[in-house]
Amino acid sequence: MFVPWSERGKKGNTVKPIKKTRLSEAAIEQIKGLIVRKDMQPGDKLPSERHLVEALSISRTSIREALRMLEIMGLVEVKPGKGVYVKELTGDLFFPLSSWLSTHRETLYHHFEARLVLEPAAAALAAKRAREEDIKALEKVMKTFEETLEEDDIVGFIRADIEFHRLIAEATNNKTIQLVMNAIARYSFEGWKASLRTEGRAQQTPREHRKLLNAIVAGDDKGAQRAMREHLKAAIKNLKKAGLE
Image 1 (spheres, rainbow, N blue to C red):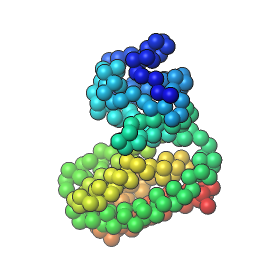
Image 2: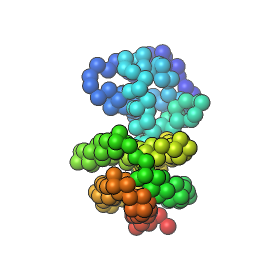
Image 3: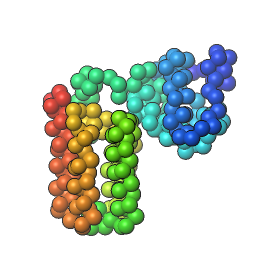
Image 4: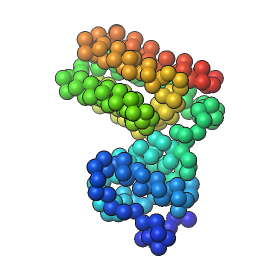
């Protein structure tokens, strides 16, 4: 049963205001602290964004970023129109991959099937329409991906990978494609989580991204379409090697 935010302080588990930099990461640790200390159980509803903003003394943007990262970890579940709920105390990102694959097989097939339909065509369109600001944004997220990889920050490079693909959809300048890709990025990131945990995938992905980005920069629509299809099929191949059959 959900315990009101104001009541949690009575147990000695209040969340302290954050004053340091990298606020979203600090917020993650504070929110995880509530979950890991088992003040909240799976199915419990987290305090509202407004309460978290007040308790941590940081912006709503930082709170949303923290919740987004916790969602990727599998620690919380966002239910549109209802709120954010504790999902698992351990987080599915930290389960053994083989076990995780066995329980997400159908979801993963649907995830990649949809992306294979959408993304190669989107990449081709991006090669024709990408503006200078689109290229700069893609270069920036490429750098972020490489930095998080060096730091062994799995959540960070999952987020960077998702953002790279979302930005390609943005570069199409087609609002419907952007809407569909944003929905996949927001509510269906199981494929990103699984593929980047397979052996060698995180190291291979930047090379594939670079090939894809080079084709977009060159305005090579067929090359971009081919590079995207190869990129997605390589991810599927790695997952099959890891036990997805």
